[in-house]
Length: 161
Image (cartoon, rainbow, N blue to C red):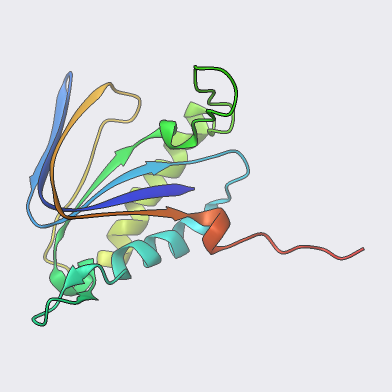
């Protein structure tokens, strides 16, 4: 599971038949799922996302999280985060999770964001259209762009033989 986080001052997503947003200060996250991802990683990834201290405090240091800021959250499904560009000039996407299963994971990711943000969160959560060709409009704040990769954060335990 990969989440490309962009700290934004505003964002919106448009696609044929739908729009999401606009949001104000918060995070726009491109979210992709790969072969081998486990549903059990969704909650820890969302916890990391909403608690990551990447917003400035009064002293100008990145010391506040999305939850502390009560900022908005925009989630955009993005299978191209699993592009493989090692061979040739056309990226391959065989490492991306199949669309049906990826949609299930994305829905669980959205739900988990709602669970973590809960009652004390005054920000808003929006999502782009799964499988749609979207236009993403954003103003990156900083700019701050960070990649979360579940394989790096929560590596599978190795077995000794």
